[in-house]
Image 1 (cartoon, rainbow, N blue to C red):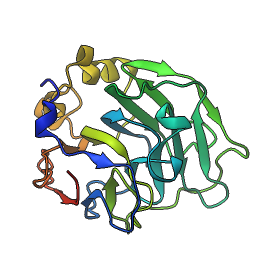
Image 2 (image 1 turned 60 degrees about the vertical axis):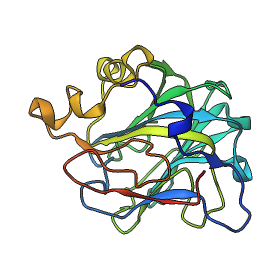
Image 3 (image 1 turned 135 degrees about the horizontal axis):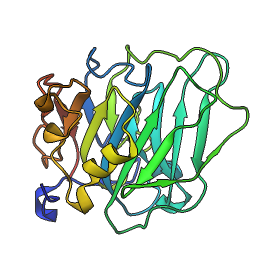
Length: 231
């Protein structure tokens, strides 16, 4: 499906006035610890800048986060491990503010010293690891809710729009990333070759921006997202 028209989408204001702006999905076994043995998170995003605190959350499950920095032009990440967290950033400015981009992050928490792969609009981009590199056992996120466009305390509000969020419990390959990007036409993740519709069971959550109404999980797992204060 093509991206929805602007008047169908909910937008995040990129501020922290003491009121939370977010989409919250309750913790559930289907979306817990997706990086265990290799996982993927994907979204279409339209950044205006780096949002509240200069570190706008795209996706946040407390023990792992994907967020924007550098005025909204770079993608940063953190994956919690018990010895040293795996953290880093795209080496170059890979996003253009005021434009839609498709982002994909793949990571295997069993190999914390190996940085995630990040793709923008179907292309792999360079990543710079912070020092020290990740080390130790992954810290489970099974006790944490999943937030789109913010963190739990509401202090890192995204500025712009997010849609077509998908979570997979496998590291999508380059060809699978290209399939999801679909030449910029936002493929319905439920018909992707790694989705249950093809006999596989890698797609664990899939949410489409549904305006101010509940963001339904379009997988059979039914982990819907509750919308708070978006416009």
